[in-house]
Image (cartoon, rainbow, N blue to C red; front, side, top):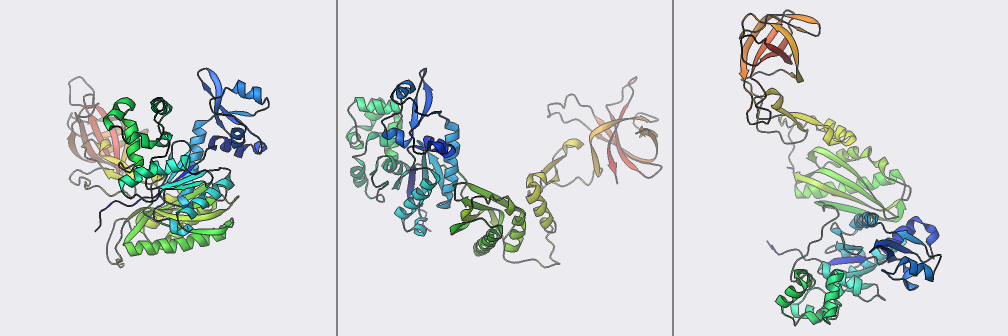
Length: 513
């Protein structure tokens, strides 16, 4: 089998006026007007970003707002909100999952998409890039695109490629020397360096990538830092640069696009049914079952809405999954409509093709799976829990709660030490009378009622677990199983060892069936 790494082709989508365009989407009155974004810098309010019209009017980042207002007194000014910009960019990265499962965000309001193997749906790399730019412009975000084998090269072509064409494409990597020649004309700002490093390079008369080729690497590192060498190696393809996906790529995925946005719930159910059939066919071919599926609607306004369904046991029956999704579909916001819908399998597991018959006993909660699935999808699987054994002789520490579909632990309940079916959360202090210190009580009082003991078994002495933080403060316990005259059975214990002059302290800890 070929173990070579997967070939990558990266599409970078850069939005030069992203911060201003995000504000313009919320203030339609700004359409056709230049405006700027401001921030505090060195005690002064300066322009942090501009709209396209403001840039064409000559306003630049770093200009004091007072100077800008002197030129245009009615210039609208908005405060920069970088966190809101980051959230909006992430939302666009989620929207970009319609093109590829590998989409993330880069610096300077840029999206990075690994489109290898995804371009044939759109007529090639150029067709995919134009489709993304067209749709994004309809959302109000005007962008430029770059395509290369590396994220650094794609970023550089989006920022410094042929602006009049809006898409800059570098051919697949050939020889290192040919790639160096191809990139030599790019400005050093294509290396994604900070302002201080770019200024230092400019002060030495270095302007283009080709200017760095003849300088020894040790000299570059000593004068300008290791970051410069890392960025240079990344853009030249010498060092790999991963993309941090905005969402974990699914194991399997199917999708369907529409010429007109869907707003009808019945039509969405039909789309889901078709996608489920395709997904389950793929799972059957791969010998796997899904534990969690996500149905995503990509809105015509750029929003993405997800509804998820999970199962306690992996499965690939489309009818079962359709029932699990049935209650979730109304959550889809149908105000705008969806022009693309996608079904993703986020968690799968091996699943044999054979089915056990009604006599083949496979207890692992198969009979409860339909109930667990319905309750989990309605209330959340984290709300469904089961009891599990923990290695501890101290009763309240010997049990814990785990998700109902977790693999059972290898431990089992200690049959040689019977325990009550109902263990009280906290032992309840009671008054009891015993003839001698080590004997079970003759009777005890609880909830205003006297229980006279007719049978008892014990004591079972449990010592504190010294390795716990509070082990030194706890005392030994002598447990008794007792039955009163009415047939009720209880689990009582006396706390502490016998000491003359110290009255015994009795507690009720559990109730037997």
